[in-house]
Image (cartoon, rainbow, N blue to C red; front, side, top):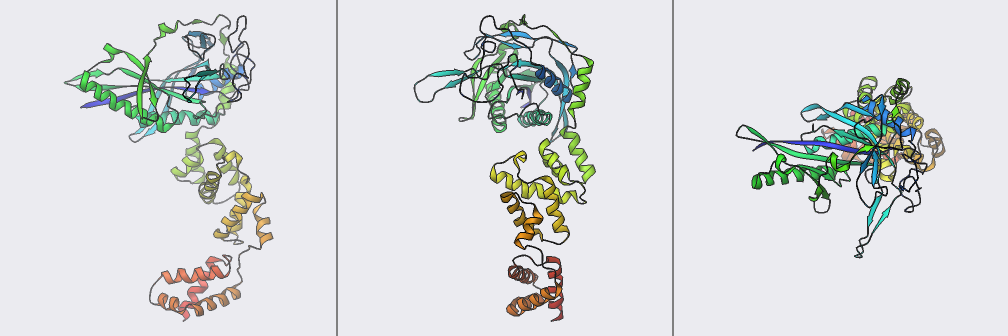
Length: 484
């Protein structure tokens, strides 16, 4: 059976504003339930909302980064629905006049680069959070702290053709939002959420049939997203083979993904626009967006990940995979660029950051922002290796002490006497000693067994605790072995 998987995404991004979207309550994750609320975000009678200016600026910033058109006039609307976590009985959102439209974002797929069209980007407020106890009591509570948190909703066209492409798209959106500094996009905390609309186009007997669209929710990780959409693809295929139900006949349905079972389950029939009874928010005037504000936001966009990856490859001579790793976050990219200032071999520092520094951060559960080693000290450490003051092996020990003590590399080297031994007479004497203690290895090398050279080098390094200059030592060792 020939078919296409058709996926569109609605990505919700919580913004890192100091206060909520329409009131002065602190905008922060967690905390004691129902302590960061006020009459406005609780929807109490007589409370009037006020638009958060930073939310509007962040929306423009995100829209420009996603190649959207910014509206000259935008407004807010009431989206009416009754859920326990929505105290007003409606959500302040945007309907027919969103702040940004007609964008696009490219993803690199196995078949090459693909553009995903973005229909709209609009502002809205978040709802509260239902807390369901798992103690068998059947009780549920509502935490309204999240009510009024400013959100951007980014709605794409159904341009993705596999679960993998959908994941790439959402990962790309997250990367840009983090680069802009407008959201931390922490999926575990819910500051990045995605609903995916998926159905199949099935081709039989020269005709195209469309299966019912499922809006899949509750995907709280990229792994869960991929698994949910793959399951839904297989489920819709099976349903088509058994029932041959079309989109025209059944319409849309909302399904939730259960991470434990790996399955999607029906939650409710999908609401249409008419079900929400949208109407203009009477307490908020339309917003006129000046050309000056748009130009200001354009200058604030800065260099985005795709452009940075290309520049890293051309300016620093890095391989594409290395450039991709170093530009994964703006903080890491900035750290790298600061560390290579004035250094002639950027690829050497790039490798050290990815392997040694990256390994340390992962083992300690730290972000690059929390790294105790300043970028310039990575450069200083590499310069000590280049000058022959320490070996690459000793550099790893020095780096470990840098992370533990906060001391610069040269100070650690001097305090511990870790300078490389370069005295030729001393090294020659040591080589002769090691050769006399290991005659079998000497004979093995002279019979063409190269591994014997590594063994002898290892013994010399053991004697000097790794401080003998490896290049000089290897050269002297070969000379002595040849002389014999």
